[in-house]
Amino acid sequence: MSVLPIHFNDIAEACHRLKDIAHHTPVMTSVTADRMTGTKLFFKCENLQRVGAFKFRGAYNAIAQFSSAQLKTGVVAFSSGNHAQATALAARMLGTKSVILMPSDAPQIKVAATKGYGGEVVFYNRYTDDREAIGMRIAQEHSMTLIPSYNHPHVIAGQGTLAKEFFEDVGVLDVLLTPVGGGGLLSGCALAAKTLNPQCRVIGVEPETGNDGQQSFRSGKIVHIDTPATIADGAQTQQLGEMPFAIIREYVDDMLTVTDAEIIETMKFLAGRMKIIVEPTGCLAAAAVLARKINVSSKTVGIVLSGGNIDLLRFAALIQG
Ligand SMILES: *Cc1c(COP(=O)(O)O)cnc(C)c1O
Image 1 (spheres, protein in one colour):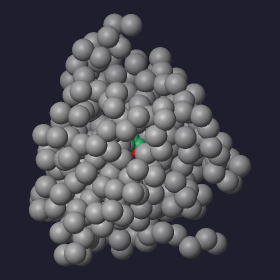
Image 2 (cartoon, helix red, strand yellow; image 1 turned 180 degrees about the vertical axis):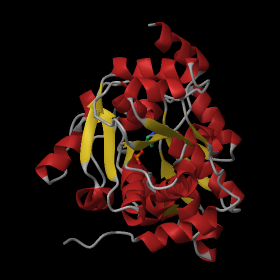
Image 3 (cartoon, rainbow, N blue to C red; image 1 turned 45 degrees about the vertical axis):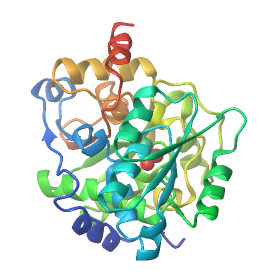
C-alpha cells in the first residue's frame, strides 16, 4: 500500500482553520430532480462559496499554515481560473501578498477579479512560456511560496472539508459525486467520505473529451493527454496530480464522463428549476446523475456543485446554443 499524502485528521484540522472563514455552503434539494432519477439528491452549493468556488478552502488552508517568514514574503500561484481568485483573497485575509501568473489572453473579468482581491497579476504567453518555470523563478527570486491548485497536501485537505461538512449536514450518503480536474477536490472528498462511511461509493466525473483521470484510474498509472476541448474550463487539465492520484486509487470507486451537451442541459436545469448559476465545470457531477450515467435509484446521493464563476453573457450564449 502506498503512503498517502494526507490523513483524515488533516481534514478535521482544516475544518477548524476554515470555521467562520469559509462559508458553510447550503445544501439544496429538488423534487423534480428526485422524480427524474427516482432517488434522493442533495446538491452542495460551492457556487455560493467565497470567490464562487470550493478552491477558497484549499488555498486558505495552505496559506494559513505559512510560517511568519513565509507570510513576510508571500505566495505565488499560477491559474487562469478559480485558484487565482482563491489564492489572492486568502492571502489578503491572512495579511500576506500574492503574485498570480495568468495567461495574457485570460478573460478580463478574471484578471479584474483577481486584482480586486488584492493579487498582483503577472502575465505569461500560454503558447510560448512555461508557466511552471516562471512561477518557480518568481518564487525563488523573492523567496515566495508556490501553492499549486491541486498537487499539495494542504490544498487537498482543505478541499476535503467540503465532504465532511456535507455529511454533517445531510447524514451518511450512499453515493458522492464530484467534478475532476487535477483531482484535488475528488481526493480530499473521497478520503473524508470513506472515513465517515466506508460504504459510500465515491465517483469522479470528467468531460468526455478530457477523460485522462478515467484512463489513469483504469490503468493504474497517470495518463497525460493534450489539453482537451470542452466548455468545462476548470477540467481542462492534462493529467491528475501525483498526490491526488495516490488517494484516488485507494478510495475512489469509479470515474465517469459527460458530454458538453449534457453539461449545458444541466446548467439549464439548475438555473431554470433550482434558480442557481453553476459554471460548466461545476455541473459535471450533476450532469452524470441527470443524464443517467449512473444508476442511483433508491439511494441518497450527494452531488458537489463545485463553482459558479461564468460571465453572464457566456452563460446566456451557452444555454441558447
Ligand atoms: C478547479 C475546479 C475543479 C477541479 O478541481 P481539481 O481539484 O483540479 O480536480 C472543478 N470545478 C471547479 C469550479 C473548479 O474551479
